[in-house]
Structure formats: C-alpha cells, structure tokens
Length: 230
Image (cartoon, rainbow, N blue to C red; front, side):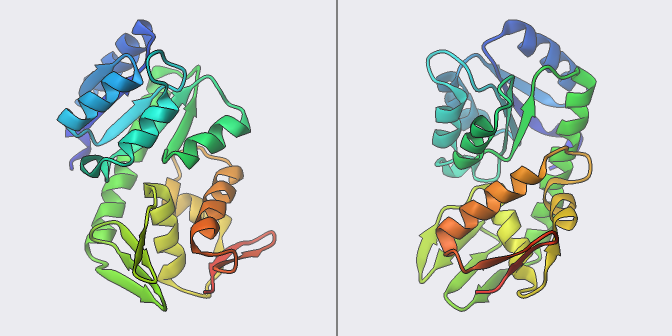
C-alpha cells in the first residue's frame, strides 16, 4: 500500500465535514469514499475495502460504535485502520471506542491540514507494521502463539480476537519477553511520533491484553513501562 494511493472511507452525518475533510484528503491524492451513517459505512467498507476509516460516533440509523464493532468482525477489513472523529472527548467515550476495536481517536474541532497530517502518520504506521509483520513469521511463548502473517493469536489452541493496536502492542511486548518497554518507546513504536495520544491510551490497551491473556501476563513497572512475563 503506497500512502498516496490509499483508500479512505469518511463517515459523518454532517455534509460540511464530508465536503471539507474529503476535499483536503483528495487533494493529497487519496481515494476518498463517503457515508452518512454506520449502516451505509458497513456496506461501503465491504465493497471498497479501505485502508483507513474515519468514523464519527454520533450518527443516525447506526452510530459509530456499533458500526466499528461490526466492521471489526469482517475478515475483509482485518487490516483496515479505524479512527473515530468526534466531539466527544470524555474518557468513557474513548475507552468505549477502543473496546469495540478502534485504532485511534481524533476529537473535533480539528483543522483540515492537521487531520491530513494525522492521516499520513496513521497510514505510514500501517505500512511499517505490515512490513515488520511480513518478516516476522510466528512467535510461540508457552501456550501463546502469535501468527504475524495472518494477525492471529492463539492461547492454548483457542483463537483470541485482537484489534489492530492490541495485536501490535502484544507483538512488541512479546518480541523480547522480560524486557521493560518504556511508555515513550511504546507510544512511538505503536502510535508514531506524529499521532498525539495520551498515556491513558496505553493503559486501556494493556488492560484489554490482560483481560484476554491473564492478569499476570504483563507486569507494570511503575513510572517506567511494561514487560511481558508469562
């Protein structure tokens, strides 16, 4: 996937947002498709198989949360990045977004040029992670098997579902079991230096990993970072 030719699905019930943001993304050479609600977004995403979906939360017919959760279960969108674009910045809303499989969270209002910069960063990270995964094969640690080629995780032969960022975080931590990965290193490696996310983002993803792998699978080194130990 070359960054300039990436396909982007922009989903919002506000025509002005679709027009302004879509215009700026098209000017960067991206292929842009639009939808006005979650139900329409699912149909468009299944047909177009975009590299990135920018998804509003509050929409009629089907909101962004429900749409994201449904799209994360679609095999054809397994490698698609989904980021929410919404005016809701409360912690509970952000956590809910990650819980249904979002990769990132961008709050309104945002200047079109800043959004374009974030989009470029997200797509660069996608390309870099795919290149790393393509050369990684699989990782086996006890009862845990990580298939980097197919983005699949198995624990005691049972397949577990991991959204993209959770998978990338797990891959990083298990790449060197026992090593303490500093929070700054995790943010830069998984989200990139150009994407602004808070420390709360890491905490949410670590919590989700522990829920699936067990509370004793990842240790917190207070004030420093995390390490995989199980």
